[in-house]
Each structure stands twice: as structure tokens, then as C-alpha cells.
Amino acid sequence: MDAAVFREPRRRVVAVPGGEIAALEFGPEDRAIDIVFVHANGFNAQTYRTLLSPLAAGLRILAIDQRGHGATTLPADPKGRRSWRDLRDDLVGLLDVLNGPPVVLAGHSMGGTVSLLAAAERADRVKGVLLLDPVIMPWLANLYAKAPWTSGRGFMQLPIAQAALRRRAVFDNREAVFAGYKGRGAFKTWPETMLADYVAGGVVDAPEGKVRLACAPAWEASNYAAQAHDPWRAVRRVTAPVRILKAQKHSTCRAGDGFARRGRDVRIETVDGTSHFLPMERPDLVRDALFEMATA
Image (tube, rainbow, N blue to C red):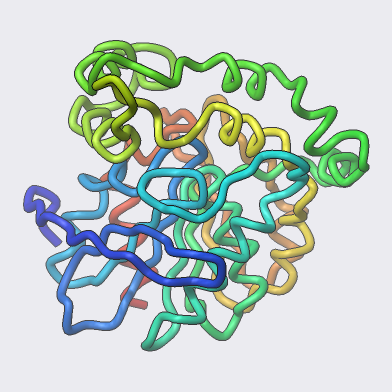
């Protein structure tokens, strides 16, 4: 595997129940899909282009835009949302229409958790699960999140959800988006190429010659607030190996030995010197993990 070689992906649209999922496809077209990759909240498939492209020499990878993100056209109404089961069901629908042998499901942050939830529903379609600092709360907090007065309603008052609601959505042009994010906030540790890809895949044209974020602030906030799904229950139903790479700092993953014991084959590792944006900071390590699982 040559991490210095980058191969441009192909754009693809996959019909699933309720609409279509947009995706980027890497690797040989005459090969079955090896990996389905799922992005973090507010991001998009193209954000991870430089992470995934070097693997395209020998693997075929489908990186999707989740509902409410990128170029995917599935309805994204934040009203009344309490969990990520809609995102899980989208991924299950995708697995159901893919031809070929079982795949590796991999994802970052929210995308990792959604991958785990989907793997629990379609164990026969999954050969491995790689989670990159997934969102997994402590068990008691997860139990509390299922209460009707918390997830989707009370959790909307969380600072991270309120910050998403205040996020600027409309800009003069794509250059202004890049300039506004470069070196700031969550993007401090990002390579400029990944930030440019995030903007390219996450911004769409708006009226009067302006552009807007493809992921509406209200939808992003609803993803932070809707926490009534249960990864602690899901991991018990996953039959494939599960590997979790946790960030050393500001991790959203509170899974530990108790979580691992609930699964059949769960390995949890903390990656020194990383934040929640581990795929941006250690793409080499993530690529090696993807390659190892896909070729096992």
C-alpha cells in the first residue's frame, strides 16, 4: 500500500428505501465493495478523500454522504428526532442493495456509532467494524438518554447543540468558507487539503450567487441532541470483530472494558497524541487499520 499515491474517486448514487444516498467510490470497479465508510456529524464523504484514496490501489471503498449531509437527497427533518435510528436504517438499506460478500463498516464519530448500530441489524452483511472515536456515552448516561424528556428535547440545550444552531450557514463563496474555518476551532489540527475537501463536499449553491452548508445547522444540532439509540445493546448483537480507535484528548468514546466484554470480539485502543479528529491527525494509522481488517 503506497500512501503517497492518490486516486480520484467516482461519484455514485445508490437507491435505498425512501430516496437516494450519494457516495464516492474508490478502487477497481470490477471488484466487490470491501469497505463502506461513514462520516462524522456535519461532515461528508469527500472530507475523507485523502484518507481513503491511497487504499484504492487494491480495495474498493464506498464513502457515503449520510442523510442531511453532502449530496444525499433523503429527507432531513429535525423535528421530533430522538435517535440515530434513521441513519442506521439508511445504512442498513444500503447494505441490503450492495452485491457481493460481507463488507467492513467503518466510520468516524457519529458515523462510527451508526456503523455499529447497522452491523447489529445486518450481521450477515458485515465482516468487520472499525470505529474511529465513535460517540459512545457511559452506560448510565446512555440509559438516561432514552428518557423522553432528555434525548431530542432536553439534550438540545447541550452547549455543542446550541453552538451548532448558531453556526453560520450562508457564505459569499466557497473561498470564504475555507478562510473562515482554516486554523480555527475544530479545524485547528486539519491538513489544508482535508479542509478543502470538506468544503468541496459540504457546500452547495444558494440563491443570489451565495453558497450554504449542505448540512443545515438545525440538522447538525438534532444529531447532537438525538441520543436515544443504544450502542451498548447493539455491540452484543455484532458477530464480526469490532476495533475501536479512541482519541487521547477530547474523546467522545467512553467505551472501556465493560463495553468490550459485552461484545464477542471487541478491541479498544487509545491513540496517543490524538484528538477527536483522529482520522485527520493519524491517517496513516487509520489506513493501516482499514487495510488490515479488509484483507483479513
